[in-house]
Amino acid sequence: MRRLVLFDIDGTLLSAGGSGKRAFRDALVEVFGTPGPIDGYSFAGRTDPQIARALLAADGVEAARIDAGMDALWKAYLPRFEREIAAAEVRVLPGVRALVERVEAAGNGVMLGLLTGNVREGARLKLERAGLGFRRFRVGAYGSDHADRPELPAVAVARARELTGHVYRGKEIVIVGDTPFDVACGEHLGVRTIAVATGGHAEDELAACAPDHLFADLADTDRVWEAIAGE
Image (cartoon, rainbow, N blue to C red; front, side, top):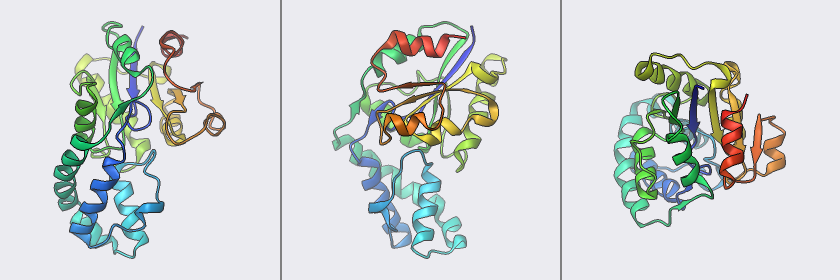
């Protein structure tokens, strides 16, 4: 059996207690002078660069100025986020620890990975703070790799190939996430999708996106593993 199992982070593996949005607000103000309409904007399922561009464009910041300030934005954001998450109530969601351990222990043909809109260093900070461990996720694709989430599965597949020599295809690729964006992002590759209603989207909303499997949470490790490993 071969599986490349790619987990989203926020709302799927953990809740970071709003620490990312607080750090994002402060960094946007420092670099661009405005956070944009951040209070009414949902970060769920979106990449960090996509979030920044959308907020700034909504407040009238010109595209050229946004482009020129993006590197400075991450330099401002990450130290703030490290401080925020150190003080935040970070909660690992039901069943996550057991499921991650199950996938990790499954064997050489099964790779544990990440597919997240977080920039890579933000992802590392969240997983380490939650006690889940960043390095155990052998491959990853991040918002820092591409602003468009549908581009990220192919990034993870390419990195898995570099490590193993195997090209994961179709239902060998499993995306686990809590938003319609997670369900949709791998459609062009024919991936297996597992939706979990532990983020901001209810089960009926996720069901309308037609994932291969849908769970209220990840607490039933055996059932979720069957969804990952089954034909």
